[in-house]
Image 1 (cartoon, rainbow, N blue to C red):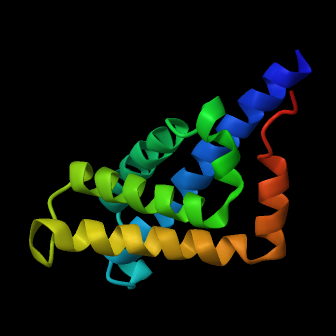
Image 2 (image 1 turned 60 degrees about the horizontal axis):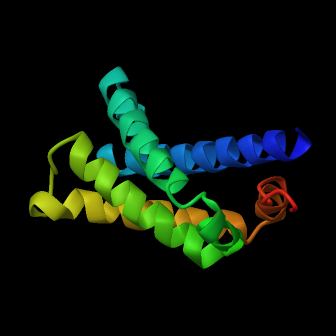
Length: 134
């Protein structure tokens, strides 16, 4: 029972971390850094993008891939691709053709992921999300 609860906790953590970093990156890119212009529509779109990225991250939360979630580079790559797909599906790009905004947002999420993983908080989050021991 403890292993199942630890597994659920770890997957919830992965989803929430991807949701948070993708939503943050999306809000900054959509407002071009001017967070005073945030609207409810921006939040809705950013949370939708973040949820897609979080669900895609869960695809890499199964036994074969689970140990890779502890690697900061793999986590950033998952953040990049999850955010790119989420942003591309969430709304049309406002600059740089159809790929400009999703690529910029995805790069932002990956950089946020790498920055966070380099901090004491990031180290704590990695320990929280450790896969359950067999």
